[in-house]
Length: 605
Image (spheres, rainbow, N blue to C red):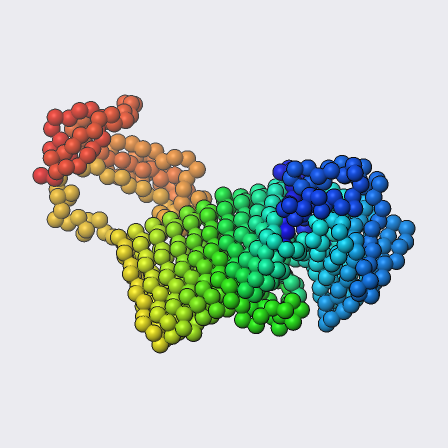
């Protein structure tokens, strides 16, 4: 696998819509071997020079002199029918639901449309170029139905600014060749993938290149019966998977979509790093009712077993043998919900990688999961560092190992850990040793027994340990009593009841009454007057009729404040804010109007 490089102005947007991938921005998508500038020039006019970064220059002059070059190489029964501004491609060799074409050269200039006339039941179209020229796509490339399109040219592939890709499935463009792959760099303001994908793959001994995506918003959404929206780096041979890095403000992986770095053969999975300055959402299955697999939305670095069809088509092993990569997530807000998954796993013989999440707020709800799992090797470790961690009902954090592998370890450092009923934090194994669970939390709030939530066991091997260090431990909660506290009873016998010979009071006599609790609704019309209540200094509380007014139930009530102090405040006197801080004999700090030498009347005697 070689590299793909995308240069896009930040103010532009790339939108990958269902059934169409259209690059309509001022940019060039370049797929070139890292050291293949000379190779890429083959077949191009002298005026088409390459910039130091591998991007084709003088594309206008190049397109003007460039004729359609779609020529079969004769190894497969591929047929090209030339019409005005159109090239129809038929024939090829079919195996199952896969269709194969082979060309000596394959380029589409501006104003030309190349149409693959494939059957609608074809799932994958593999197009290889065996000549010595790079492929330049600056026109329209179209396929039928929802087939995925693979374009393979060891000499390089250039997508010009006028390229339009009208393809129902995903597009995988690769310069499959000897050696290590180049890098993919994609920069844009918004990247939306709806039932479409971006993939960097290696099919040989060379390692895959890096895939770097930089965008203010990245949204990967949806799946179909045969494919799912995705951003991925993959390996289908002995080469290792390239690392995948996303830098964004917001990331959404929803409706059965996938973000992954995976190996299906002998190579190791790559590392997946996500930096989101605002938030990450991983949620939901596909909302397509006809999809039989109904996959969950997932972010993972994994060694995966291919389907029987995939093993036959690509010659993949039944049991992969690489080691899993690491997954690192940095964001203020991470929400995993509606069966969404964040995972490191190994479905082969190797070990899983390490999953690290650094987030201010991490929420798992509606069966959201964070997992590290292996089939045979050692389970991966999970490291969580958060301010607030909430594990909702049915949600899980698990590090497990099947067969003889040891369970992974779970390390949680948080200010507050909330675990609701039917939630799980487990590090279990089958024949190997159970992993360890270490939790450091200032506040631990459990809505179920700790034994029902935390487990580090092994069915046949040695159990692990669960260690919890916390300052505030609420292992269970009881309902708050709805009864109000009677102040007189609570303070009876206290120094507060007798500390001063003269005491004040505050009484509100409104007909509507007070709300039952601070969160109760308030009927403003019946409970609160549209005018502020009158405040008068007096030694008693009465209705307005006691002061000489009429006793009218519709009239506003009068609130009387009685405050007997050594120097009684009178109506008209200014209200003076406290300006001095004093310390009483019993150690209390009080704000007062003026410095007081004797504060005995303010403290308990």
